[in-house]
Amino acid sequence: MRMKKCKSCGIYTLKDICPSCGGQTVSPHPPRFSPQDPYGKYRRLLKKQAGVP
Image (cartoon, rainbow, N blue to C red; front, side):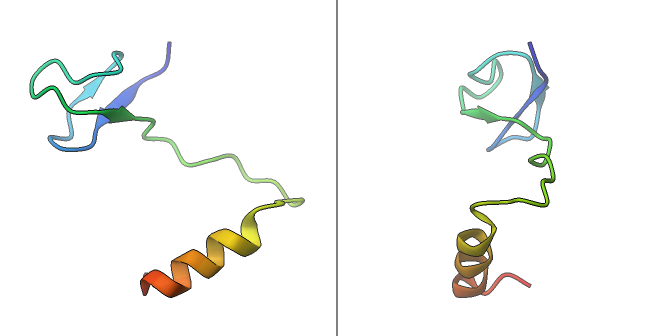
């Protein structure tokens, strides 16, 4: 089991659904770094289109 964070209220839990608000939980950790990142090009393109610095 890994720690998860609720998208809506920000509470940390080990469950897939937040026990306080019923929202979906996601992993709070960033993806692992790899020099051979096969999807880096697409991720940077989406980030540029969204206008995120």
